[in-house]
Amino acid sequence: MMPIFHCTFTSPFQAEAVALETMEGEQLVSYFLNYPWADWLQKMNNSKEEDIHFSPTLNFENKQTKQKLMVSGVEENGRIFFYVFYQRPKTVSQFFGLRQKVKEDYTTEVHDQSKEQAALLIEAFSKGNEVFLEKEINR
Image 1 (cartoon, rainbow, N blue to C red):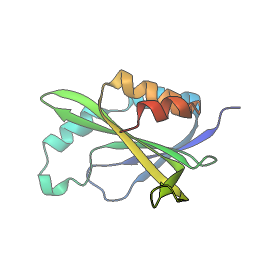
Image 2 (cartoon, rainbow, N blue to C red):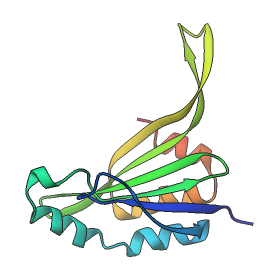
Image 3 (cartoon, rainbow, N blue to C red):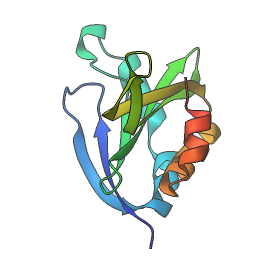
Image 4 (spheres, rainbow, N blue to C red):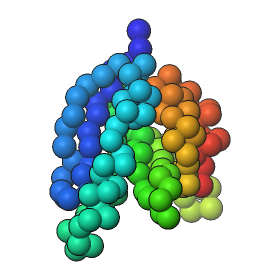
């Protein structure tokens, strides 16, 4: 059985994320691919800079594993690309490796991803492929 994911959207014009729906993992990629990214980015281009809080961002959360994948759309010179943030609990070393601590919201990111590259990361997230995500989103 595929896990259930909670999906929210962070609008460029609101400070708080808006709950969208709950979906099975196999739906995440098509949801992302069909999202109206160009519309949101065009609205941003037609707005005052002080009215914009964030880039449009889809947030996918696996409540069971406490992992999140956040995908933000960005437009530059007519090209749409994505920033992908991977947040999860992770044990990190402190004090030169003498002590370890679990950081609940450990986050890494990768920028300048095409729609296809971002879709591959979302697919890996939906299937729980942590090895692939750690390798690809480790910057």
